[in-house]
Image 1 (cartoon, rainbow, N blue to C red):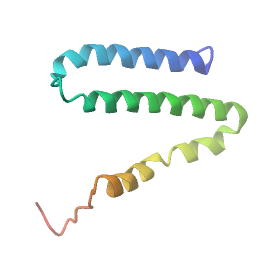
Image 2 (cartoon, rainbow, N blue to C red; image 1 turned 120 degrees about the horizontal axis):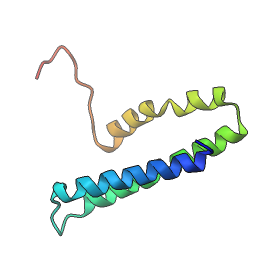
Image 3 (cartoon, rainbow, N blue to C red; image 1 turned 45 degrees about the horizontal axis):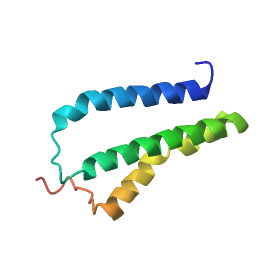
Length: 95
């Protein structure tokens, strides 16, 4: 890629194309547009994440950025527990 902006634009275009292909088959009801709004917000958040990550990588050492960026699964798990009420399943209690 010539620069990070080209990468971000190409990823965004590919996501848009995939969404345009999948959306007609998802059959949302007219009154329930919440999943579409959440999907668009998630896409915008991902794009913003990429922009910030590449911007910081341009000004800092990559060896410092990647470990910090790679911790997102920990925060997602914590947020799922708090926001969604997710609980850890114990192997002692099969379901």
